[in-house]
Image 1 (cartoon, helix red, strand yellow):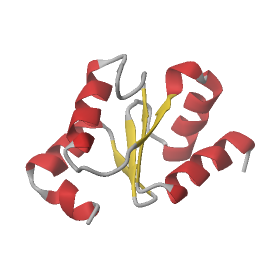
Image 2 (cartoon, rainbow, N blue to C red):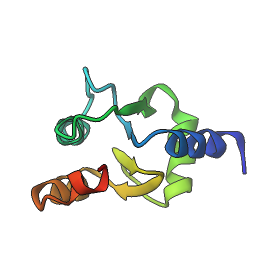
Image 3 (cartoon, one colour):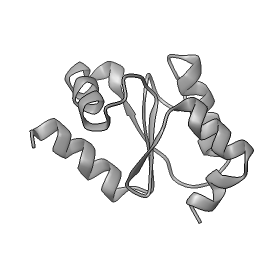
Image 4 (spheres, helix red, strand yellow):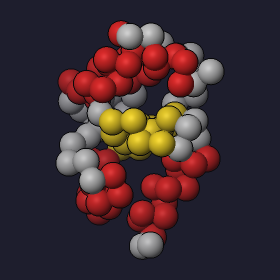
Length: 101
């Protein structure tokens, strides 16, 4: 496994909620990242955010790691959950909160 994929794996295994996004939670650089952060903040749990715009090789490695072509990408409890739409749907169905209990 290359160093970047190991960096991704370490992040998602060490933290309950990780979002790879465009920008930061305080200054998201796209609407999907903004929406995903908004939903994740409702969980009242620590969120680790990684800005893929500041690290293009990491973005490429992330796509290879998850086989998912877009960001944001959200991981909960070490597992890849999906992007903005999936996390929003889980939230609306009340399932997202159960995942972090």
